Image 1 (cartoon, rainbow, N blue to C red):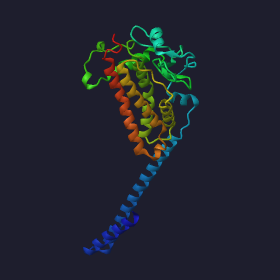
Image 2 (image 1 turned 90 degrees about the vertical axis):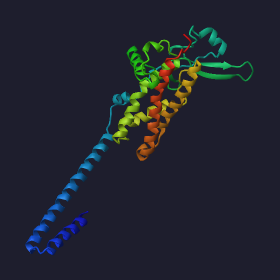
Image 3 (image 1 turned 45 degrees about the vertical axis):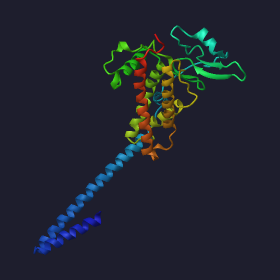
Image 4 (image 1 turned 180 degrees about the horizontal axis):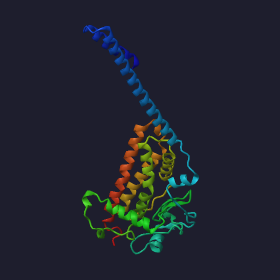
Length: 302
């Protein structure tokens, strides 16, 4: 760049001389060109200094150290539970006869070993299925459940669902939706998970926008999504025909959360990571739409 400016200055000098200007005038022209070069050099130096400061600031932000308490606040909150497994196997008939309520829902609270083993078939070998009969996602290995802890949080996510009506349902009166109490286990579990995973998804997006891929919020966010996307995190069992469609959608998005969490070296593959994240974010938002449609249906036939 500096060499180019010197050539430009020489060109200006030759042009002045060619017009019959005096040597003194030519010297003034050259001096002006020198000042122009000096000013440009100063601007370039300032620009480089500013870029360096921004880069250093970015590096410092990515190297920020947080206390254990601050790190914990970045994680998706869970509640501890006792062993979620029940020692006794059930047959499908036993479940229906002994545990199904009047709405057709089989439900165990988190204090009642909500993961049950269901034995199907009458011939040997029999088929056993591990099923989560609570309304929360459960990690039986870590003995943790993704469950909201206050009625205020439940009210907030329920209102948020209704506030994000798809175009076809806009203007639908809230009275036409099933209430939280009337929702299926799976619908409740999905609403709770959307409430809990939202901040983590946003933390990752904020870090991406600021190019802070090494920031604790980004690192912890990936760790949390990887855990949530693990096959051993059980969603509530589907119990209605509509539930089965929702269950497939939910399992797809859950697996996609895991893909974001397991993505290696996102800072070195930003473009690809951004594509993966954008798709997962869109599918996560689509769950709001699917729950809207589900809650306007009859559910258990009430």
